[in-house]
Image (cartoon, rainbow, N blue to C red; front, side, top):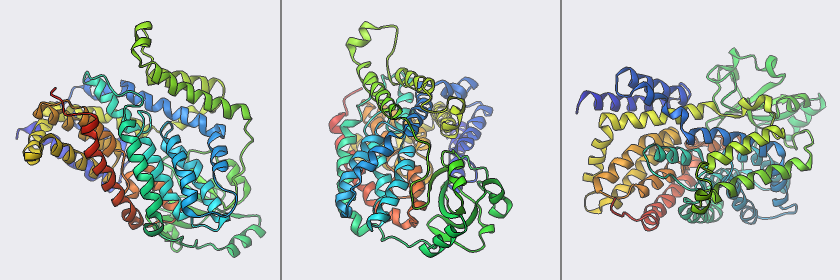
Length: 522
């Protein structure tokens, strides 16, 4: 083992530890590692910045704007309200109506805004119908994750792998390539959720603030509001006592839900984290001012949040633009279209660019504030992932690990290597972040396929699924983190239903992927 391999290996270990400890945002952790690799001469400055110009990474940024345009149009909220039954129903029937539609939307939109929009509506609806919201919020998050497995744009991880493939000279993924594996997994996953929710999901845990306290707050012109802290909340990592929440936002913190714990005493000592749910005593001005802010991901107060009326043309226009983008990117990949327009590559990048700009012109999202709708930390993480992948290849670490995977696979051959690569990627996803998992797994997939002399496509598809299908922990996927506080779930609640989900998805993936994309000789 030479110096470069040892240096990269230690660097990756340090990165994983830093991500698990959650002392800094993932973007700055990966950027720090990439800078170290550049200083050590393992990668060049050109390799360090190559990810920032990658079409896959820029497509992710554009899709943030497209998702925001659809969100602000009110189209999703209108659809979900019509889906939820107005009269008494059962949990199973409501899930059967709700979850497939949620998966369908998340196949084409960023998962986070889907959950941000649907979670408070579903929670309030469940309360009115006398049903437990805990039977719906984790399933809501899981449905968005499953839907994201079905298309190229369903999740940023798919676009990361797509971008890395193009970077290495491969053709890349088409819009619905992943549907061959994503749809069977989604159907199986949703059936499991519907059948297992009753036993594996907890009964609703009553809020600390009962109706009497809410009524008392209402008499003084206040009401109880729940907010979820987003990555742009300025008080993250700070103790509440050192962050004057009331002066900044005009609301008083009454309760904090963090990591499945409900904290009502010594609130000033609590160090605020992304995904925490704060229960506030606030007036109507708070929801009007901060209801559409990137500081808080979700807000609910037991009733509909007051919002500005949106013209109906905006709803239809947003959905029409989304449909044009999807159809255009699909048709643009056909050989006939490529032959007719050889100088224009009409792929997802092309149509996402056009759609985002048209939405800005039509003011479907405020064009003067467009930067706040882009998650820059995710983009930096993705861009640095390309450099980390290059470092693993340049140092020889990827080839070394690929040889180990081949030896461990033994008589199972490429199929066993696929299962092992899937498992390793899944573990990294559950512990840290999906894009970092893809960054580590991609060069391993490439080198492993080379060792076996087979087409690397089955391994690329396995990475897409494993790096996105994190069900067993709330930190495995941002939507899990959002619903954890909203539903007052404990960490173990995710483990009980998430581990079987992980197992089901892994078994289906390892069996089906080689059947759909055979291990043909490279």
